[in-house]
Image 1 (cartoon, rainbow, N blue to C red):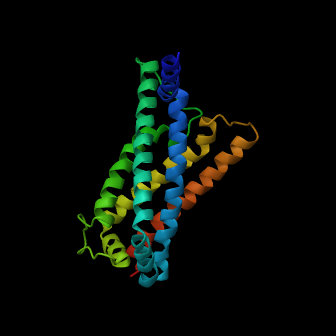
Image 2 (cartoon, helix red, strand yellow):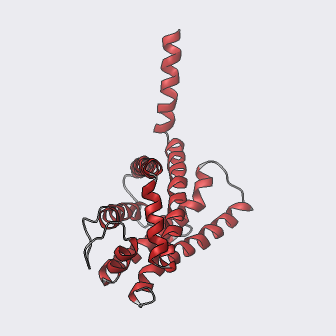
Image 3 (tube, helix red, strand yellow):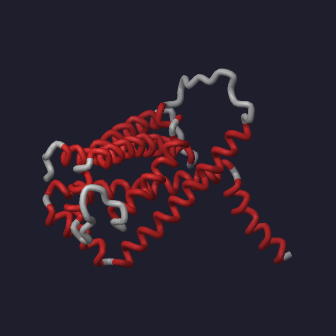
Length: 229
């Protein structure tokens, strides 16, 4: 009896994670974690407008607490891995549900952001890898040498290269679309849906997406136009 009870306990979580609802909940929860990080990351980056001392002090502060820094990194790594796993699982399940596809596909209700969620995700993953090599490891740094600890120099010298700024701006637009749609749909994934509140949530998510995009891309645009030197 004890063995069968233990087996059932282990089987239930496995069944839940294998289900469509389980994957949607994993995607929603990990999306919230990544959502919170993106907000914090943007607010940290915007300190570049206060000058080199401010943002360099911010960088030194983060590195002065390695437990916090690596704790956040490990959490993000796990969240990204689970988010990708759930996304791929749901995509495969959707494709298997309609293997022949549509003779004529029309998108009357879905938004552009929702229709691009599956391919914007892989592009954002590529951007994250490049971003880590660029600003964290300093292994890829067009424009000038990477200076350890000089966040201001590394940001400004990189964004003075037009194609670096263009790639960053494009990726941040994708991020805004991805996060905006995810923020509007994660409550529905968790089972919370109301005809009165859902439209309000969707509008709030759209406004947030615009602010997120504007906040991130304002930095390379300010560097290219000479506002930040």
